[in-house]
Length: 325
Length: 283
Image 1 (cartoon, rainbow over the protein chains, first blue to last red):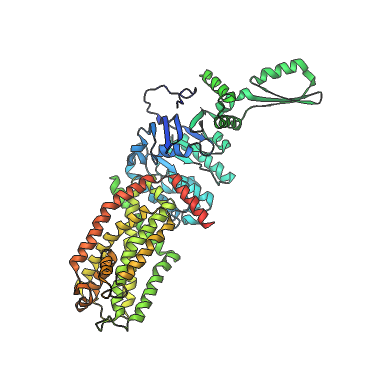
Image 2: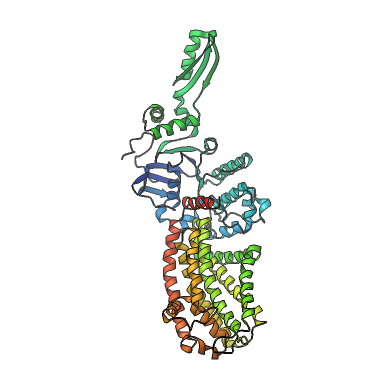
């Protein structure tokens, strides 16, 4: 099976790049006789925030676990921080952070003890550029747990626990951070605080972040680039804006004329409206133009992948996407 | 600083923190003291009976045997169950995500387990001295024997506990290991001498560390004359060294391989799957 003819996915070899933190080419994963990933290709530069979107079972977790070095791949070239994650040593491990979905581990530990303890493992990997680990009290304040430093972990609320997970993930000042559905169970305030934290990490520390989420709104807010994974392949790769603009061909125009409702989809919504108004001018009422949102783009792409239809909006999008370049 | 040294140091600290956590936790303290209290009660009522063929108190004979049993239990089963439980709750995955974290985790566990095992011995031994007579507690060579048997016992049982813990995927299957061990206690002459058992049963008992730990502890704390009612009529220190040493070698060879395999297979989705299963179990 070849997945390489997908336009918009760069398959030509390019020279090694110092700033390339993630370089994944034609990654394949097969469990028994079932292919879970059919040739996933993407890259991430230093300081970039990537959101990996996709329906359940699309292969998001498998992809992320391969990159974390927690799972062996079946085929493909993968470089994470310059090393093959299947052979990453502890020095390599020290440069990345993994935010795990904790459950009840270390319940008897005090928050501060746990963070300081895990931080100790990173001290030998401190460099002139990156001082490891993070000062614990500063970190606790950053994630909003300063007031809970002396509490036992099992006394924390769900949201507080997730923030502790994030703190554990970044205590070693990672250059690359993996976040698997980081805000599940957050209330809106915690979610906003978390988003600010992610921005701060990416902007100030130049941390590269790969996150998976089901929340499109969150992806739009956080990510520089969105990858949509469906059916084991990347079906879209671009900024949130690009993605929604690429299905802009499907902008929806609604209006009423003489008491009748009209709905029309047009690639060039502005041109269509211009013509419409020229033709009927005052008779057009309640004009409404709805541009495709990221959600529409996502739904269109995923639907097409899952139903096996490889025509329609997605193809249009690719065509437009490649002509953008 | 060398990363390995740093990890060992962090592991020692981990052990100390876990000790502090466990000794300030009511549930854990209950788990330590309740079996001790139960055993001491049993010995108290056995103090009047005598070991068959002697005039020595059966209670006083049970104390060292129970100390040996406690070591085997603490070393093997408690460590195994901790590994299974902490794999399920994600503690091990966290260690894996940390540079040299697995080394730190294991060092911490060894410190925790061996200290708890020795503490349990102590809280059993001290109160028992008040109502049991005939134990050799003022004798320096007794303490020396007690020490080497205890240390060798831990080296023989901890790695095997790690192997068991690494092989058991589902906490429910822990019972499968607990049960045979209960049977083994009955076979191993902890509460009553096994001289009357058929030879093949005695043979089975002598394959496992529990028997030898009990014997070793008895050799430390009982008067020399009591050796006469053991199998072969002797304390058999060389054999004790041999069998416990063989278990230690076996464990130390197997444990790194099995633990590495276990660590390699850990990932977020595996922990999530276990969590899912555990939730169904509870719900």
